[in-house]
Structures are given as C-alpha cells and as structure tokens.
Image 1 (tube, rainbow, N blue to C red):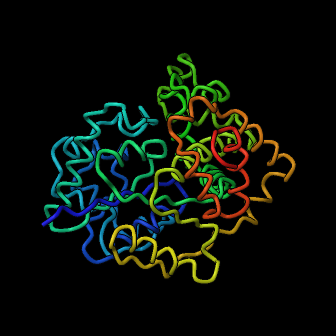
Image 2: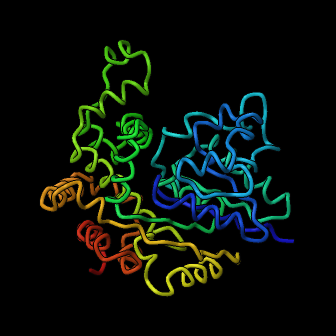
Length: 346
C-alpha cells in the first residue's frame, strides 16, 4: 500500500489556523499534530497534555475539541520533550529555499510524518512557523500544502488586543524571528527598522520576554502594524506560489465558499474535511484602530521595504500572480503591487 501523502497547514498566528486544523482533525483517517515547531515541544510532558484541556484552550479563544490539543504527541514523549525537536526550529532559519540543507529539521518532521503514517492515517501537521519554509518542506515530503490567510490588519488587531490584555506573545514571536534572522537578506530590512533589545537591557530585565515587552511598549501602532504587513506579504506570496489550496478567512462569508474550499481540499488531498462553521472575520474593529491614511502609508512603507532580490528565490511569481483572485480584493491589490517588480506576465 502506498504511503499517504502528508498534509501541511500553513498560516500566521491568529489567521484561523487552529480552526482549520481542528476541522482536519475531525476528518476520517487523519492523524493531526498541533503546532509541531512550537517551542513548548522541548518541555512537553504528559502533565502538560493533561493540563491543556479543551476547556482551558477554549478560554484562550480556541475551538472546543474533544481531546487535548497536543494529544497526538503522547506516543512520542521522552524525558526531554518530543523526540528530535530542537528549540532552534521555532525561530531560527525561518526562511529556507528548497536547495538548502537542514538535516535536523528534516529528520524531526519525517519522524512525525512516519508515526502518523504508521497508524494507517494521513499525517496532518498544523504549522504556524513555516511562512517561508513551505517550498523547502514540499520538496522533501511531497506534501499537500494548505495556506490559511487573513487580512494583515485583522491579524495585527488580534495581536494588539492580546497585548492590551497583557499577552505580548504574538508580537514577541515576530520580534524574535526578525532578530534571530537579522542576517538573512529577507529579514535584514525589517530587523534594521525595528527596535531590538540591547545587551544592557537584557541584563537589566533578566528575561527575554520582559526585554521584548519593553521594546513593544516603546513601539506605536504604526510600527507594529508595519512588522505584520511585512511578514504577511512575504509569506502570502510564498504560499501562493507553492501551496495547493488557499483558504481566505476574509472570504468565508461568501455564499458557497466553505463548500468550495472543502471540495478543493478533497481534490488535493483526498480528505473529506468540512468547514461548516467557517466564519468571515470582521474588519470594522481593526479599521477603527488606525486612520485609513496612516494605515495605507504603513502598508506602502512595508511593501517598499521588502527586498525584491532576496524575495526572488522564495517566489513562483507567475503562479502567485495567477492566483491573486483567490484572495479578497484588498489583499490581492497589495500583493499585486509587489509582483509588478518580478518578471512574468502582468
């Protein structure tokens, strides 16, 4: 019997990725891993699996599920977390072209794929940290890739709301990634543009989380929004060129869209996944946070900051251009302005 083709889900945090992953988990014949590159993998224990109950995760704004979110990892637990996982997977080498080597990451992902397949099921990996590693993974695992997209303004507004409640995690993730990848040509302009906690500040605050929180407290809305637009644009263009299916949360309210996406997933993966509860994300709250002129100025600056030469190896520009219609018009227009700088038919 042929091995099942693994399914990889990709998307930024707060883009609807957990909901989509939960629907794959409910589909017949799947073995679904939640956030395989989460830094918590290094300290995952049975007690953590038992503690992260569906009720607790629901209070954090996640879908209510019948089993703990990390339940599929239970057979892979060791005294040092999940076998083969390394903390560097979460933030380091965030951009990988297909030709680059990363044996440790390849072995780790292969171990998850192999375990799921050994259960006679289709392995499904729900990623949030693969925005510029999709093609790299696809080349090695012949995966079926699904990209979940949300308007960067809505993503940013969700991060901002969490930060107002004392949860700096989402903005901190991107500051960490920008700093850890500051030498990479794709991230260098962003890293140079954002405040970075210095050594003295780190020593004074004694905690990376506190030092990043202090940096975020100094940043205004326009600066944090620029960071999100920059990352979203790079990852969305990469995904359009290399993913089999795009699910745009901004289009969820269109008649028949949920059924259409289920059909697209079935055609690409053979899986019967239902998105009956797919709901459009409202932009009204987000739009009220930054005046339109300021918002559009930030978007222009972020897109101008993206280095075209460095982005080139990560893009299939012709395919991305042909698929812009799969996104809501506002996002398609933003990305179309970027694609004008790459060769191929307009």
